Image (cartoon, rainbow, N blue to C red; front, side, top):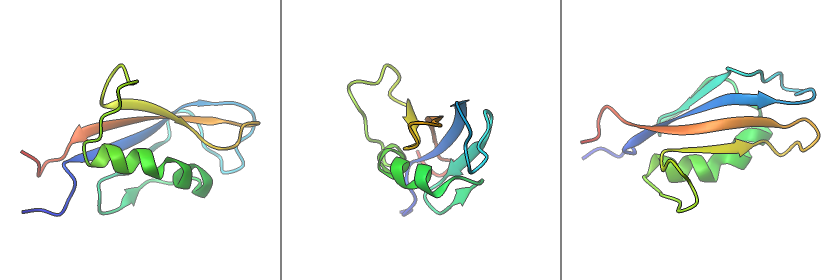
Length: 95
């Protein structure tokens, strides 16, 4: 039995308004696989999205999502928001 979650998550920057001090740009990608993080991500955006990423990694579903495997997440800088699309995919070890 694996301790890894049944999914991996991609966080893709789909929108950036104003000036992101970290330097995020549309198209930036960060991957979460339950063992680590691949890619660069602002600490503030990361900490704010951890509950969604954790839920998605372990199969959580949310009734307000049109697609149960995709949601959006905005960083906490309301003056210069970076919007991420979080999408989950089955891990290679699941099933």
